[in-house]
Image: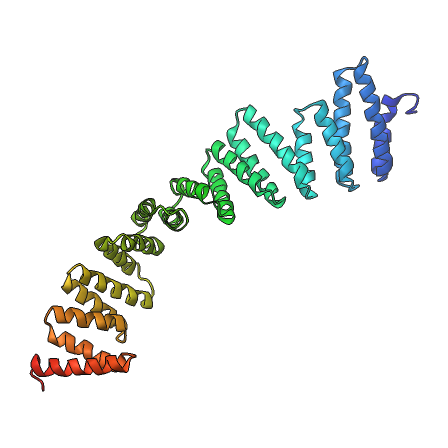
Length: 364
């Protein structure tokens, strides 16, 4: 009957193959139908035959890619559809799903590139940006990191939604960081830190990382100081920013600013050992600046946390001498006479302690 009247027998024959699970016969039948409709489309039937051929190619692709697990043949069907009609979005969607399911990242990248260009041409920059994000992920899986970074930069340029921009920026930071590509990393960190959708805490962390990068890798301490300062404005408890700022100021001999940076770190409630060290540094800096009472208080704060801190004991002894404070001096010397690692230092501490006790404390 099909040989005599294809249109009359087409549907029942197709139903028969489908009902009995004769998928191989169904594939052969559909391919014959596609050829027939292709011929008719070139003759009198025109668009209607072409539409039927397109619908059958799509169904054939679904059958080959799904039930029969013949993805290469399914891909051919979808690509034939797209060659005949570039606006066949269902075919393009199905092809993308097929390529993803079978891990075919190279042709997937090419398809996503085409989709991004089409979205851009249609004026949908946000859709193009999202496609570029997916394309970058596929490029990474292919170890094409440079291409992935270019695609992420393209996504960032086109994205306006906060979530899209955040995804692009996070991935750019990660890739530039891994590649040790410091100039673009600094640029992206600065851009990311200005994104309004981020919390102040996260903005501060990004500024601190930017400051560390500018200081250690790019050797631009003034810019680094600006980044660290901004980080502390956003989050006063940002310990890396306070440390970085203190290192810069100490290197530049800006002792007052260094002391303030150390005080910020102390206020951030760092661990006990770190606070002992910080108070010792604060005492040393305040003594250098001639702020002796503040220096004394800093050394005493260190000793409240660790009564055996040699730095604090020695600093307290020095400041007590300058302040003519024999009571504090005797307290420091007595501890140094017991704790100093050098026997010479212990003996000298005892000698001075005896002298202070006899002459200044009237305690022979």
